[in-house]
Amino acid sequence: MLSLTPIERDMHRLLRSLAKAGDPVDPLSACIGYKEFAQRIDPHGLDPYTSQGQMRGLYPKLGHISVYEHQHGRPLLSALVIRKATGRPGSGFAELASQLGFEAAEDAGFWEHQVAQTVRFWSADDPIMVMDSAMDQVLKELGSIKRTVRRLAAKPVEKG
Image 1 (tube, one colour):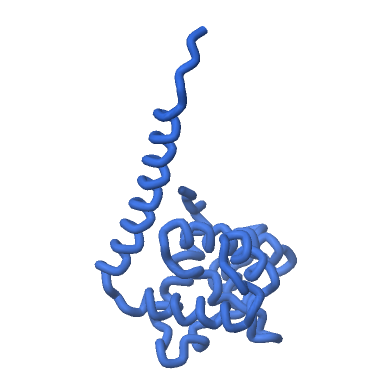
Image 2 (cartoon, rainbow, N blue to C red):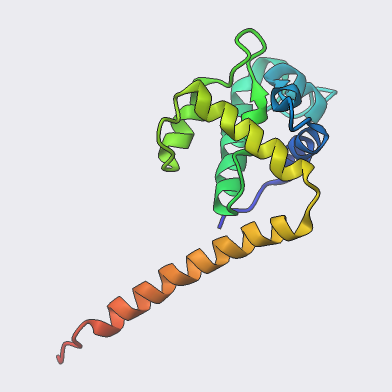
């Protein structure tokens, strides 16, 4: 499992607050532009990865947050960050979603569904739902470990 860097934790906290404040009836209202997002994370432009000239450093961090969320069985939180000109996320969002195994990740419908799921999940303010998603991932990982141990135990031991 991944862990988040301090700046990624700040980004994660902001994204969660946007999702929590979002309206499940109009989930797209929770979205924020890349530039505004960077300014809210680093209002004084001190971080080289989020400052105006270095916005590209923001994208891998958003991707890392989505991987982190996926590993914890939650929707892709970075779906909330969009290009204001298009009202959609950058192409990296769909590429990462495909790498994570989502089908039709390049479709606008997929992204909109992720935004809706994100807002629904975080605005529900249901600690049981949060714990359930974490527990589901732990159980999934334990199942994988169990299969690996069984496979290793079934291999004949070579005598040397």
